Image (cartoon, rainbow, N blue to C red; front, top):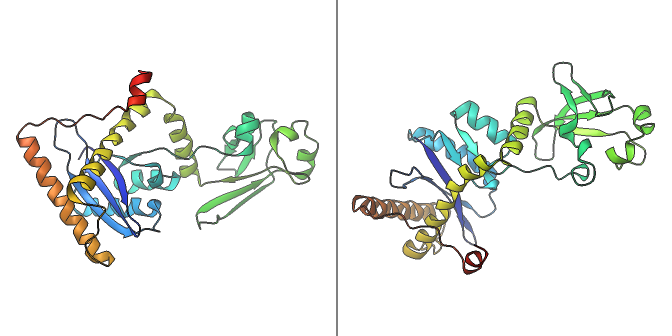
Length: 264
């Protein structure tokens, strides 16, 4: 399979997660539907979607997803377990340093994974390296520098807001950390943005589903029956799309708003 795009539809109590193909020379067909309760985080569905696509032999080589479906763990797991390139906006560094002194962001510290040491931009080497868990039960590494060296550092005010304690870092495991850094740099490029533009097509799927197939109007009570309705709607959409493709009807173009036209 080639590229596939992923998005969700929301209702007051349920969410519908849709995956569709997005090759230029083929009809865009829905390949997977997941129905969850409204409180289910998008992130936990990434692996579920990939597993179900794998079971059907429909795994894509690239999966273009919304920001809610991608993090460092998902990037690594998708590539390692399913050979999928997961493309979606990853969270940028929102730390205090990124806003006031970017030269002291975590990414500016040199990490020796084998020796379990980190060197700061001023050349000081960390004193503590402890594996642990974050608040979401994810694997992390807690790094801390020496108190004496941090307190006497002339650049302390640019590096940390701690009044007394030394600078500390919370790192993801090596594979996840490196995948996240690469993804952050890639999403700054024009090539990445052009690739991610593919996902815009899924907005048309949402519009078609809502306007023509009543996707936001659940006719039944309960998650199982609602999920069955979503499957039926997706099948109907696929039939409509196949008919349009056989009749050589071109895909609708993305609309440009009146304000956007004024800017252009």
